Image (cartoon, rainbow over the protein chains, first blue to last red):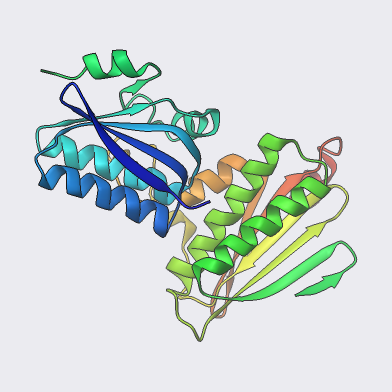
Length: 115
Length: 150
């Protein structure tokens, strides 16, 4: 299953709903292009909804890290929403779970962004 | 594809399709060997990471270079070897991705994940290339193969 991405605005936060696999090749490229597009439009408050992401490989993890640092370097915030167990475990063993701001509830995640 | 007993081997092009094929074969072999869903995922991911290293870092997508992959269920363990024809890999030179200075780097986590997910990982330098051997003990047979491999 290839990755799909769609964006929506909620209270000034761009929620990116991702589904499928974030792996080397198509999935990683979709994520990279999506975040670049948002930044170029000035959207710097980004919530990546990973609830329907079934699989991430090391390339996908790298893209998440890259997106995080890119947004942060622009003075913005990028947070993660609804990790599956597999993605959660992967972020735990790579010690990235504490680097990202990870949320389970969308409304709480939205309200946690700086105004 | 060659099948001999419990051993399956392929010679693959240096493409992402080959990575996907190796991953899918690993998933199937792991299921046949009786691994849990979590372990099947870990094995398939380790194989994917090793295949990506072979295709991307080893052979650098060179169409003249091949990746050789074999899967064997010895009864005690699932043993997977992946070999490329690249310039070679010095495992000791791979930075620790958990070190604070590397934590936010975009790449460099593949071998760490492979080691995390498999029971044993061995590297062998070829001429040219690198072979990585991944071993996962079959449930209920832990111990015997590890001793032998050491």
